[in-house]
Image (cartoon, rainbow, N blue to C red; front, side, top):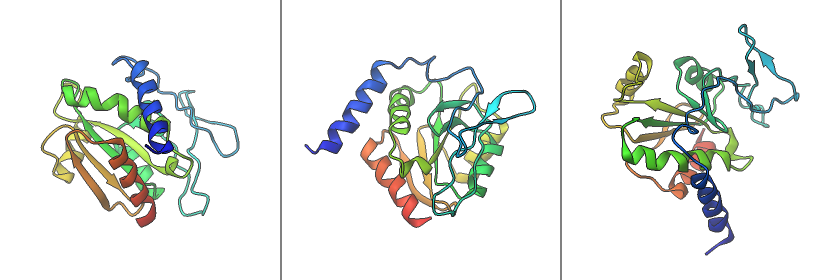
Length: 189
């Protein structure tokens, strides 16, 4: 096995070991991503919002998420954050998740660990958990699912910075397949 595989395995094991369902759904709306200046932005309600670093090549603008943070660059979906990420030309990972789905419950800690362990290059990817076909699905999430033709929970899309689908996954997906799609999104967008 290569050294890379062991690092990914260690991240996954550590992520699964400390995960509980309630911990994967934080109650705070605070975003703690580092800002380029080291400071933070304050919203009107006093919550600190910090921008994700722009692409070092200058190819994307700063993206300031306002939604509930799940992991590093992984947020509960809001139409406003999704639109802002598209306008910033960020690669996007969409995970259509149902709160009753056992496959989703199994995949979620792996997605959290993956997002928390991304390399500096891959940290440009912004991920959104989109509630679908569950008790927390709202009209914005339903609209996005309809636009993308999603029929089942546990559907995942990786989009490049031009908002083009690089890869669509159905069902359980390996970390290595997700990482390969993230890399392709960075190269093609």
